Image (cartoon, rainbow, N blue to C red; front, side, top):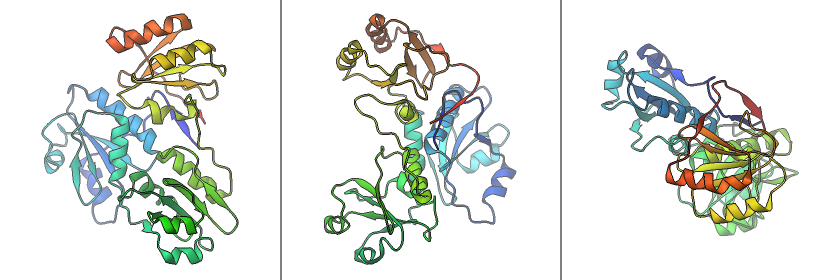
Length: 332
């Protein structure tokens, strides 16, 4: 089940102290990947980094843990990580630490965090799989990539091998023998069913497909067409390099098609739909421009004014209103 978080006043971001860190990592096996936000009180851009973590947390949906560390109060812990700038982000997976040397962007934070997950849960598919890939329920990613994607490594932790084996196949011949027609694809096999993952290759969608397959239910992973649907909001819009334009209606105005075509080479992504509309306060027929970096919205009541407003977004003259300060989730 997917949940869409728009304003994260309710947050799962933990606070790590030296005692908490030692309790979490000392003397026991811990395979969790953590993303830490190191800061000092009143440091600049703390809020931007914190919001980016909250949004990345939505994208990784439990596969990665997130926490803040106050380096004024926990100077020894921060010095152990050799942190010298505040705020800054870093990843810890028990065996090594690596810093994040990019501006905060939730989509990038999530991708890099997932890449730190150990891949030992994913096995290379070989000839031996052919004999029992239905007797032993199997989830196989067919790809030409040489590395195991972080989202697939994370997915392999969703079930023990006794319930579902996770494999990766790069062999064209094996792909054909297993009845798969294209690279890339993700396919689930058991004694009675072959199920293709139909959504985007994003962790939340793949998690939904895995859990649905295990329960024998139809996956709810969203599949969009020319316009994005609201279920894709976090994956598309939690990227600081773009802005999203959401039409709060099930009808696509022909004028919107023209506007979308005129801005196709610009950093805008267009949505249509009323179901699970992610922005509180909008009314049916409104157009909402959302920017995750601010974070903020612009509500446009008249489509005749949408082009001019998008031009102002591009040239920096647009005025965004803050998101509501209360938190809410919408079930997808």
